[in-house]
Structure formats: structure tokens, C-alpha cells
Length: 431
Image 1 (cartoon, helix red, strand yellow):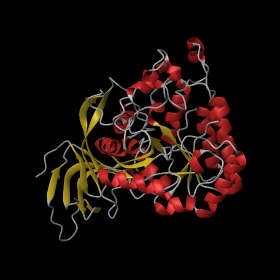
Image 2 (cartoon, one colour):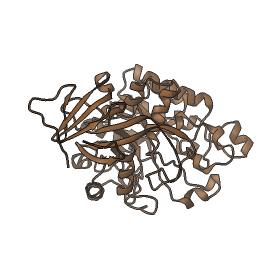
Image 3 (spheres, helix red, strand yellow):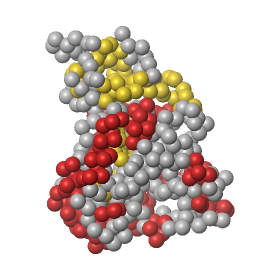
Image 4 (cartoon, rainbow, N blue to C red):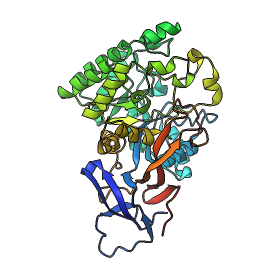
């Protein structure tokens, strides 16, 4: 339950307010009641000594697959929302690519009901752009939005029929609905899981060219220009893709983009040993692509970093590289890798926090991502000095499929609050 809480003496970093200073935070009735100074008559029921800690807005992850309904052998809503809370993530935007697909209010109600039972991080589902994600007929977009979907998504299955995509964007524009698209050209993607480059050639594997991204991106941008729809491009992977998006934004198109966290650290070289945990879609690309994506995140071309969380059972990754299922389990490592971007000089701390809090929240019009008084009390307390090692035992997600196993990350989540209620606690002691 929510309680009146005084978080004392922590380093509060809230990019939405351009704030980075040691101060106090006050929580009451599930909202941020005060910052720096207690509201009149405030009496704390709980005081947390946060000296030496980072006090951050709860993270907002706009790219996750929770596997339920339809694939509970991989993960379920309860397990993954609890993993999110343990990683400091308080808002999770889930993909509609489930079985059945989230293309009706009945399925949406099932998903939201399971999330309520979990009593953990907040779930904000994405609705399917087309019925069954089959790309043939439009879904019940307006009904899904009224029932709680924050945006409509192709769920990682690009709409091949350009006329259907145009109609979907036209309808979304009339309803003020944000559309999330995956910039992949299926004909150029099919049959491979690697970037088209010298590593794929050396391994004897077919490659996915950068054109698989830029062709799809160019088509969608042309339709955005015609329809005026608000479109967000999910999980860009290349320098040329980022450049196309930057040009469209300079031209005033209502578009934005994100990148999966693993694309900022890993490259095609990490696949050299046929490592199936590095089988992702879009594929890990070249060093120059990774460096360009880092620059795009730094200059704001890419306003959000997502986990692209895709938990798998062991068998899904035990197959040879080309036969294994794509995807990385990313909830547990999202915050630690964001802090590592600061350590490596890619981003300032404020910018790193922004890309996983206020940036994604603003893109989808979500209420979280800030510690501004009056906002939901979604808070993450982090010990920035404590190292931890990514091992199967330290992962909270049921998915253990991560290429970051064995990495040392710094920054351990001590407490996570959603609407002022503690949903994860690993210390410090409260008084």
C-alpha cells in the first residue's frame, strides 16, 4: 500500500526538470508531494536514508515481450513485471505479439487483469495495428485505445501491404493515435539472422543488409508525410537508419525512434562464435553502426532506449545459431547498461537517465518518467557504487538468454516504488 514517505538526502536526478542535486523527496497518496521541502502538515510514516544513493524516476521501457498469453513456458506477466521492478522499471509497454494477439478488448482485459494480480510494475499494453498482426485488416484501434492501449504497434511483424499501412496511418491520424512501426523489409530479412558484412561472409551465413531497415523506413516516412500520422520507429539498428530519421525530424515530420540497449554495446563481432544469445532482429551490426547509434542517442535523434526484452526458454537458444529463436532477455540489465553509458563517456548521467525515463514517457504521453510534484510516485533508489555480476542467479526474469552473462555492472537497485507503494526492496533499512 502507498504510504507517506520521506526519502532523505539522496542525489535526485530528474531530467524532466533539469534537476541533479542532493535533496529530499516526499511522497503521499501515491504521488510526489514535494521536492526539497515538505508540504505543509506532512508527517512521514516511513523515512528512507538515501544518502549516497541515486533517486531516479522509475524507468519506462517501451519495448518488451512478456510472453503471456500463449507462451508461458518462456515467461509470464507476473514474473516479468516483478523482474522489471527489480531492475528499477516501473512502466512496461508490452508488445501485442502474443497468442492470441492483443487486437481486441477481450484479450486486453485478460492481460490487464493478470498485471493487476502481479501487484508490481505498471503495465501499459500496446494494441495490434492490424487484426491478428497479419497486415490485412485494421484492428479495433479506437476501442483498444479507449480500453487502455497507449499506442498501436505492428508487434515486430511489418505490414507488407503498403495500401493497408496507408489506411492504418490515415485512421490513426484521425484518432490521434500513435503508431509504432518496425522498420524491416521482410523480403530482405527472411532467411538470415546476421548483419550482411565480413563476419557473416567468414562464417558462411547469409546476411541482412542495412537496406532492410532503410527501405522500410523510407516507405513509412513517405506515408507519414502524406497522412500526418504520429509514428514511432522501434529498434533502429544502423547509421543510415538513424540518419534518415534525423533528416525527417529536421523536416518537421511527427516521427521519433528508439534503439535497443544491446545495440549500443554489441556488434557483429559478438556473433563470431555462432553465439545464439546474440541472435537478435534487427541483427547486431558493425562497429561504425554501433558508434553512430551512440551518437544518435547522445544528440537526441533517438529519444529512448528500450530493453527489447524477449525471454526464451533454454531450448530456444540451444539450437545452432541460424535455427535459434531471436531475442535477448533485457529487463535486468537495462539500468546497469544505461549507467555504463555514462561510465564510458557516451552520455552524461542526466542524459542516460532521460533516455530510459522521461524520453520514452514523453514519446507515448505516459504520466511517469519524472519526479515533478503531482506526478505518480514511481521512484527508483539505486546504490551507484555497488557492483554486480550478470549471472543466471542474479537475473530476476525467467529468461536467462542474455549475451551479457559474466559482465560486471555497477549500480544496484535498492528500492522501487510504483504509485508510492514499494514493489521491490533490497535495502536500505527504513526507519
